[in-house]
Image (cartoon, rainbow, N blue to C red):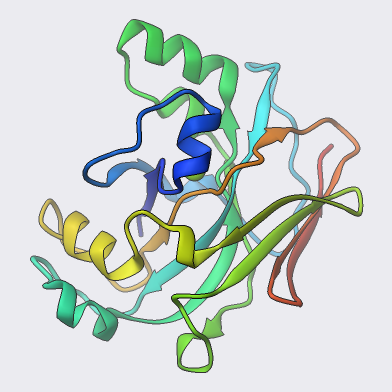
Length: 203
Ligand code: MG
């Protein structure tokens, strides 16, 4: 199983980090051990002093495929969930400045906490799906899939040119603006619409 993450997929988030709005999808991978499920506690690692939350809609692939045409992409997923692309922003800045890969900043253990719950897409409007993240009971991020630069089917078509997508692969579809730091003791709760998707603590 692989975790594919899309970067800078919301124009206002690209702007808040002074990044250009991309002309084609930017993606990177996290290993399977990045997953943190079942509302497990996240333990703040010692190699960074600045972890940011990035709340993102997550698609699960449920059929193997490569070179998937955009028009056929909907046949490759049937449910959607919510997760966080934890980012060690201090390490990421260092990697960006040196032109180095992002793995240290993005792919570390438990850098992808996510919900156990997957919502059937047949019941949802994927072009107008709102989601939000609360930190200690206050909303810190609000997003809507309508603001994605590259929508889900375009992402699947794009990344499947480079490698086969397999059943169980997860695609984190990018974060809206409002990213910010976490601290030990914080409680993070994610919602798709009114549906609570996850809740866990930083320790
Ligand atoms: Mg992200």
